[in-house]
Length: 419
Image 1 (tube, rainbow, N blue to C red):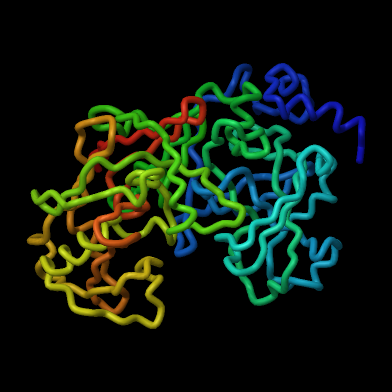
Image 2 (cartoon, rainbow, N blue to C red):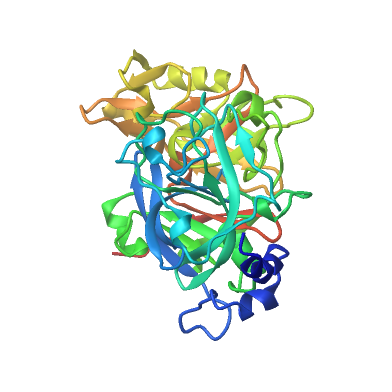
């Protein structure tokens, strides 16, 4: 290990703003002070939200999957079974980043031990193994050395194909966890490189809305949020840990609980209040905010799902690949495309505010390529138990904001600009 380089970088691990400012890797590209909000263009894909960042020196532009449900960055490297020989475990088509080519990479495995999750939600029944290292990461106008997770693949993944190199983690750091759990943005914020601790997201899901996203599918804002798109006010909710999620939905060993979530207060179908109960005494009624496969489909209890199926006169739909709708285990149902306007609005209230958040039927009924209209709802847990992922369907016409410093979740209705 380069002890001189490590001695320069280790102060950053404690969030030292002075060290960050002094280090030659830190670049604000013309900013004389900490950076203001920067809007990252996002591509909405079947895999989830994809974007680009730059890693290392010299900089290498890589595609990243913006993951609200992972801590730190999981960087796919060409390392297999402890050796730097990608032919042992992966295809040449896999996009990787080799930190050995970066002059700013420092191995810090003697500071942060190797970690492995088995099972996990990267490779499910195969182990996910990482070592920690420090390397330069650039988000928009800010570039600095941060702690990252670098993969060491311990199984044959030659049949896997991922359209990204990095799982760009954006999870909150929980009390008692060290800085190796910090998202890149939060590390840079603690280094004094961003003025505000906010990360915002707006999905411009229709052609008539993409102007608000600069012509892009979505915008992930760093160091702020789109105040110009806020209709009314932002409602802030406490971030709460729900341990049952690791048994019911996102299964990791050892457990991983770093999620943006808050307790559900009530759920309605139309004006009819639906019974909801906690999954257990320790966990409450968890509302987790996510996108991609686990964030698709409005979240319902199993009983509320059955109720909505009856109301919309759903007919069983069996697809060869049901994950084109969502990855829940519930039976899928087709509905009449002509009657969407008559279907009820689904409403949610979270603990902390009386504000009710609505999802009209046009947002939870999807049309497949063959013209079939399908009920896009996801039922987790059993009976009236509630544990749900609030993502794509819920976030239409809403902006979500994560406050990394205070561990708060902000929600606001969107005021779309007139075209």
